Length: 292
Length: 263
Image (cartoon, rainbow over all chains, first blue to last red; front, side):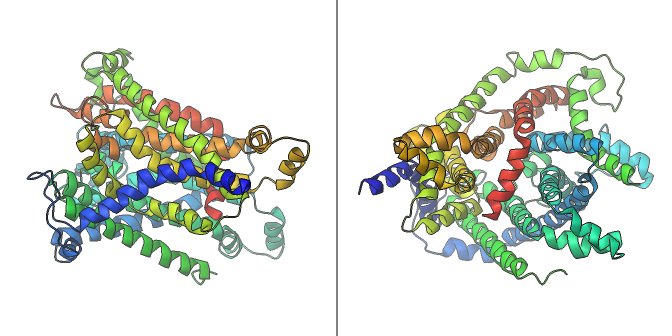
């Protein structure tokens, strides 16, 4: 009896706080999603419309547009970040003195605030005085006149690159910690058997990294579907609405148009998409017929 | 060839940071050029703390939000994860899954009801509002991270101590806490970073009084045009604590994230 009281009294403060700061607002938000509510017109919740707000999304061109934007943004960002961070990890995980210094400072870019990064890249991509614009102009002269944040395609490219830039160092560190923990003998045995580098990477290294690749991809999917700061600070969803990911579209519906019911419903739709995505992905990867 | 690739990676990752750093010391005239030859100045740092930008105020807002959030999050999460790790409970699996699942839900969903509640209670534009919403985000993460570490500490150690006459709380305080320290530090740093960099809540829930640093950055893109050199100066002051923290606990942090996910 005493034991029971003890274990629950340790848990109680956390339970109460999580309930108050997460579950209660979630319930309330769900309730709002079932109502019509234009906050500009009334501070009182409007009439009950059931699942109308959810159905409304299906015939909303803006919604489908931002689903498309989110899909392009999320898949490219996740795939690029994972591929590049594995390559970077392979490059930096070797047992050399100077590489250990580089590994030590790799966390610095990740520690930067995404908001600051977004604004800074906007500065650096500026076509009049931006550093990256200048560098690209020198390396590939035909690209020198591009207003990077001015056209749909290039703005999307910029957004993807910036988010990849934000996550690359941390993801690389995760893979490096996995690679460093691997037994050296396996690789030596493979070399003795005459396997070449590519062979070793695809047949030994990648399969051994599987658990970390799985976690990294789930984390990346979650993070990219929730991406907000870089979108606001780098492109503001623009030009037009070409980089308007779902999360930003929800924000705009709620806090620009004050369409609270619809915005809440859209939030739940995004949550649903995320959970489905992660679930399907986990099952597929856990079965493991994707590589070998 | 390999060295060249390493150098390219380093340039890609660090050039933007170096450029922010350089820009922070540029006088106005040199800001909108790619020149690296200029007379370095500390004026930007002086300006951002001056009355027109008031960075000091935003800084103290950010500090208050982070410190109070951590002071509540960490002890409460340690107790909860100890309880979850050591005792059998009905519905424990479900609870752990539920708090993880909440992280799949976009935070914007919770911002809507919070915005409405805070409006009713007159809490909009206060640091208290930000602390409340941040707790909903930090506590689940902190529980997941510290529980993973406590799970790995053998129970025998605690039993030995309690045979020697220590009571439960003494065991927790004297034995378990030191052993779980890497996990606790990881959780603290992680919660520090998400709270310190938190942007969306601050954007929606604050306007003037309680504005924190990430949102304050947007004030440099105001009516007078964009003042990149001053923003860069403010940005450096803003990210410095995170960078120092991250460098101190780099190893535990990555380990914590990797193993926390595996569990």
